[in-house]
Image (cartoon, rainbow, N blue to C red; front, side, top):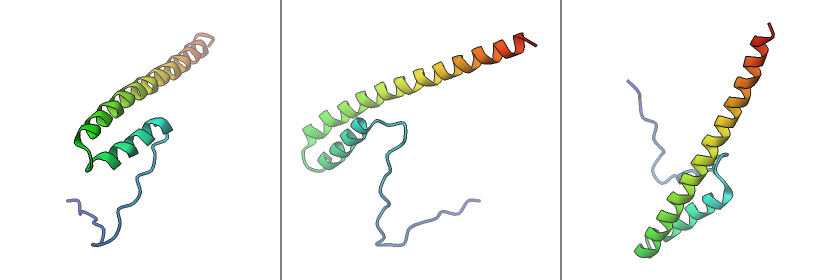
Length: 84
């Protein structure tokens, strides 16, 4: 059984760090969306859609980069084993 670790009451939640693979432009759009959350409902929905679009594009770029790296390492591995 896993015990839950909780913060003491009144202690502030730690700041959310920017993930390393997330561009600063997307991260700043997320912050703007968070600030608009309780103020303007229509603006929040527009920002939410914008952030989702940016995250989809960022995810696609990340996956393409991972595929390129895997293909390159696979090429090197196949050449290494072929020459034995």
